[in-house]
Length: 442
Image (cartoon, rainbow, N blue to C red):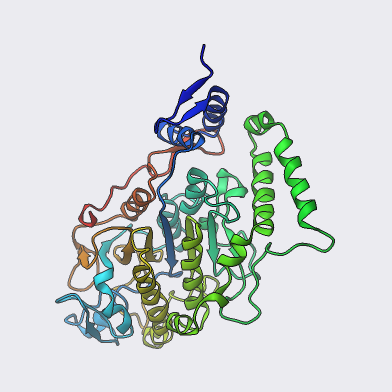
């Protein structure tokens, strides 16, 4: 009997390699499509060269003072800021976003996204995991699990903007939960806009040499693989994930090069904005260009910048210009570099804000409607999909769920959103149990 077989692309693959890949995938709870993809990768197959940058506007950005102003509504609804025209005929956005107005031909506004929860945690989990329940794996962790480590020497999933002073339990919607801590994001704590910016794990500890690290890698490679497959707690897998990522980072120049913002022209750095938001977006572009599959740029999560319960005019006059530098610069940069088909940018937060201004001149939590900006992904740009009603209270037409945004994201990444993984009880759970591709983007 032959000990050779062929993958889906016709490449010859050993029977042992085929069986080991199948057993490993089955033990990990992969669905048939994901198992076939894993086998194909063992046979030398390729995956889509695609990536996602998620810009997270923590706290819940106001739709009125960003992407869906209501200039014709009564003052208590339209708020204190005006609306300006954009590159799209008849489309207006808030006056604090003039650079956004010039690049909307390279973007899509979704103005009818909703989930009906006014709770921060629930909204965050719905948008970043696809599920309302807490302690669910993040989309970035799922991407890292399905697509693997990407290029050697780089983490598959990076989170920028998480303050080091916070306990890492904070914002668990960005973590891996029961998938195992090895699939948590690679956190970059430091502010990339300052001269003391440092990235963890890119240097050697005192007394450690590359030769010694390579010896440790050889020891890891020699450990019995069967134990890892049968380790139901995932401890061995997590240890291996952390160890291998650390080894890759310090023994390969790829990560150090990707994180080196000094390689960028001063003029481009200025275009992004010489602040944490801008330089984080620039760093995100460098990372996906180098081969990272998923990057979250978190705009000041600790202070909940967009949770504007009072004086929304002053709050947006502060946050708006930084947002209006970082995001348009990122979009323009991706298009100029020909990365607009490879990279999908998603800009959103956990919900919108109340359509009526409150007694403190701010807006409160509102899940009935929110605005989302998309760019790239090879999709059809320069359009507005969906609309809210005259006062920005709820979808007027084409209601869109956050799960539809995530299904669209998974399609871009070449991932079947119905792929299953076991939860902490061993029950198979789909990446998304609801949500469909947003067809107008095709």
